Structure formats: C-alpha cells, structure tokens
Length: 138
Image (tube, rainbow, N blue to C red):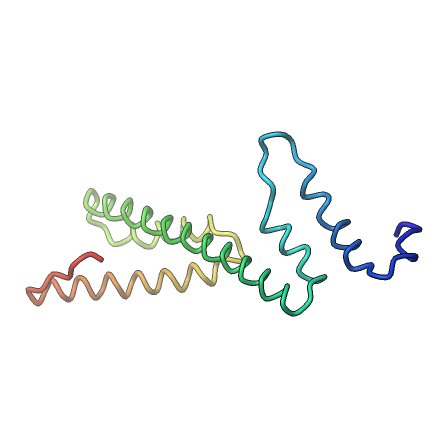
C-alpha cells in the first residue's frame, strides 16, 4: 500500500484505481479486457454500482452463451453432414465428445444443458416428420 493511502478518507476509490490500472496497460490496437475489469472492480462497488456491474457481467455471459450456441449449431451441421456420408450412429456421440473436450471446464454444465436441449429439439423434429408434420424453422 502506498503511504498516501493512509491519509485518504475514501480509500475505496484508490483501491479501484489501483485495480484497474493493469487492464489499461495494453499495446496500441490491443483490446481492453472489459469483462475482467468489471470482475476486478466488483468487490469494491456499493449496492447500486454492483447491480450495474452485475448487469454488464450478465451481458458478457450471454455473449459467451450465444457463441456456444453458434458453436453447437455449427457442430450439429458438421455432424449432420458426416452422418449423411457415413450413416453411422457412432458419429453423433464422437462429435459431442470432441465438442465437450473443447469446452472450458467452467462452461461444461452449460454445454451439457444445451446438448440436452438440442437433443430434445432434434427428437421433436424427427417425431413431427414421422407424423407427416414438418415443423417450421424459427
């Protein structure tokens, strides 16, 4: 801690500044890690500020979720193409195993939930086609 920290009445602002300085130490053209910056200052925020920071962090989480959905969709498209070529049931499981290996550990639970949702959607589409009803793509 700096000597002048003890002379300040509101050290919270000083702590926030000391926390965010490393996030701005980037090369020209390099992006600032805003998500990391908000996570770093969150412990120093008051109730109202924390709510705003939490909303911003939720935005980043939603963005990560959307990226994961796009990844799953592209993997499903590749899986369907591979399935059409091989007509084997093993390709689906191996493709999902490959995808799960690529997902960071903190996102595996989300990935498992999305996989279950996609499987349910696929099962619903295939049962609808068997009944002579084809669902519309939304």
